[in-house]
Image (cartoon, rainbow, N blue to C red; front, side, top):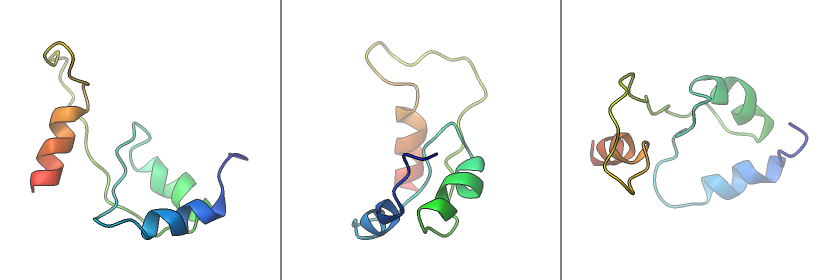
Amino acid sequence: MDRLDPADGQRLLALPGELAWASTWMAEANEVVARRIGLLALPVIDWPDDDEEPPRGVHWKTRPLVRWAAS
């Protein structure tokens, strides 16, 4: 955790758009990372529990991220 820079939170907040955790850390990202970089709790994108393989060349996170962004 020593690689976390508290200034990163301010840089992230300056970005346009809504922030969310797209990490396999899930809610733990809010518990561990957010407070260390000065962020309030962010929405957490849920990952599917299935083992369905995405099409070749598509990262397994792509479909859930697109669904979240479209909502």
